[in-house]
Length: 308
Image 1 (cartoon, rainbow, N blue to C red):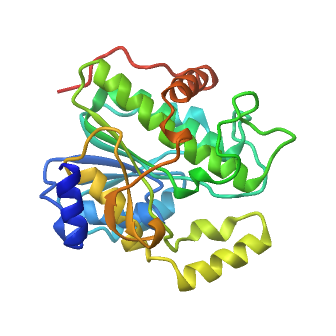
Image 2: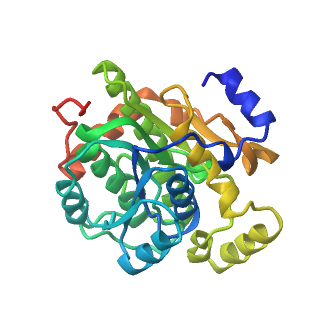
């Protein structure tokens, strides 16, 4: 789909009823047990896809999958533990049409992953970076990574000298850095795919302001109160919040596209191609982040060509 047709879709009020037939396609969605991940997983399963709920809580994942009404399976994945990421990827042995990097944590108190990384950067970016590269030999169509309009917040940069923000932690700063990292990851992933002559595309999305349980975990009580008010008066529900993910997962869009709500300052509305910060468009920062991420995770760009 071109920019013109994407705009046409926005005016037409594109929604999940417009999903194509997904029969025969396999989709992995991280964090599919709640929020927009669950909603997207359910919509894709109803459209005929075989959807893998990649979750850290198997009981909640099975409960969510049971409501999907289609072909599903549930697999254990804890993005805050690279051993779990490697175990998930080691158990994968078949073509994968779409990988949706959806799971995340938002503005939580300072914590560390199993390998000692700052939790938001480690989960939202490094876990998905490792997962994508480990699964990429099997991906046949696209990788969709959920970022946020909040990539513009905080300092608006990657703290390359201290990505773990030791002694400089702030919940918003850490979250914004992780969401900026999602966009830079998508940019560099698309560059590498194109350079390798791969037909696989990398895309990023943001849900706008979607009322989910993610906001309830903010470290600052004033932030939690603000988000509760925003959820009540400004937010879309999780069905509308999932539309950018569904749009990017199923429509013919250019590589490195960024999809989000097209109305009300990017907080709500039908999905459309949207802009990003200058920092999120910096190819040098994207390459530098990729190199650093390889060093931190020990996961490299795969040498094997994607399965056809």
